[in-house]
Length: 174
Image 1: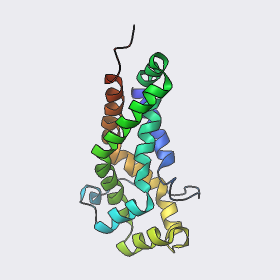
Image 2 (image 1 turned 120 degrees about the horizontal axis):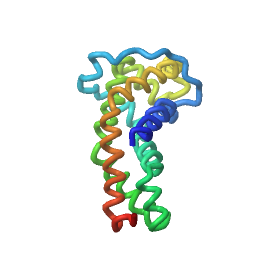
Image 3 (image 1 turned 90 degrees about the horizontal axis):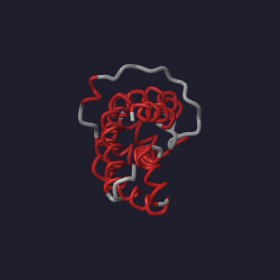
């Protein structure tokens, strides 16, 4: 499981911002700020929701949970179709349970870096926004901050998805 989490964190670092742009990352990492613990602004929450930046949570859970030995064993024993149906339900339930926290973490990170007007411009104009290059440059830093802010959340959610899936099938034969 520890190896899976390390792989998850590496892939997560590569995927944050993927939905926003197709421009390479270019910013250096900075430590998380005090603002990371604050309640995210309404503008930052709206930015994350409008851009779909928070959609990576479901993608990461789906991808990395499916790669676990537990889920792979279930597929071998019960078939891909049966496990996929249950697995998809578990991912959706877990995203429903923790998605707001994931979104808030992203919003705090972007809200600490951009003003409400800049976030609105980015959400509305995307690549045409005058702040787009700055947002792209910030992606790597945002990814590192998100990993720091959400590692425990991701581990907890991933565990629940895999456990919930396994509980829907008879005990694996040994």
